[in-house]
Image 1 (cartoon, rainbow, N blue to C red):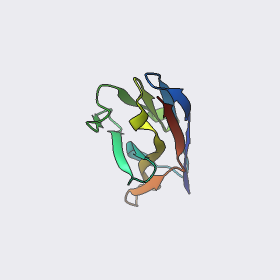
Image 2 (image 1 turned 90 degrees about the horizontal axis):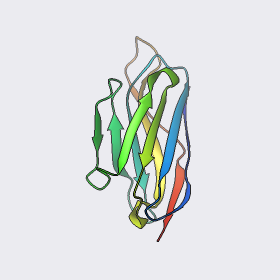
Image 3 (image 1 turned 135 degrees about the horizontal axis):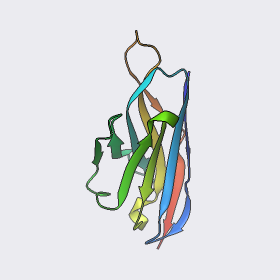
Length: 121
């Protein structure tokens, strides 16, 4: 019913930048918060950043000051601008969205398939 598709991952040198995108499509009445998570090799998935539909944002301490989350509500798309990348940022990055598919139903969590980011030192 709802699909999240991430893009923008790739290989970048330490100190470089990447911009990730995540577009939501399908049966969507409204989207509340949209978030980014990441999972490094051999580690658990961890929170990166979150933005509400009114634009209020929040970041994990590890990325604060380097990453910026933004969204285009008209396009149901969330972005993650990643600057000053470090080798520790290497991970698969996943998009998450709290979606209502109908005014009569509650929100449900949806996840994208992930996009790989590799930072070479």
